[in-house]
Length: 293
Image (cartoon, rainbow, N blue to C red; front, side, top):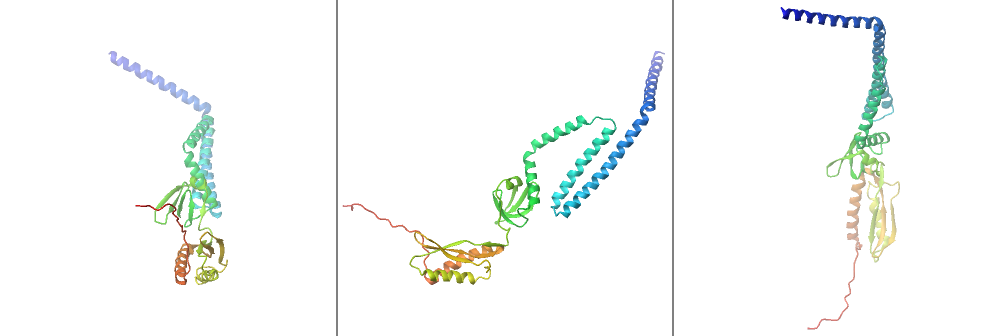
């Protein structure tokens, strides 16, 4: 009997609370329902139109950067960054239209962005350097360079690092920040290069014959360019030799092969013609009293 009474009282209390809640909702809808529906519709329109505009801007950026011949990787990255930033702005505008204060949210986003910036300082530096390398192109894929303390042929240029391959086929990953903070030497930037050799002969050798041999040696190699004209001249009267500078111009791709061939042919030619290639010598004089036994 008591249990049934308590159950009836509980049911009545729940019905009363539900009825009160329904009255509150009905009153809110009657008073502010139209305004809320309008704000919700406006927020939805802002988000839809803003998203469409963000995609349109992304496509426009890709088209402009592609037309300007900017690297494809950098083009996609910048377009995605612009799209994400504009989409965040659109979302905040839509939420603000619903009456939610976004000032504190913007402050939190700024604080988080600042913290992330400090945490990723080195990575951001490498990224900025990668953008500079892609935009200004001090070197390209396939070039042989000395950059970031490493020498090698450039295989790939990424936003954060550059991949090089050494002459003995070892891959090196160099951070872009390390490259832009130092001197970049691009051995492949020019189509032609000059080979600088110093060749010494003895003071007793026929100077004119030595020079004639060097000039003929350069003229006999088809890989040596006629313009600019090769230079063979006496540069120094050294302590133990008369030194010639031998400076032919070649195509950049032939530089190493021609250099090695010239060194070999000069040595063999000197041997055949009896020319001397002096090397440092030292006379030792010993003064003292002879030993007696």
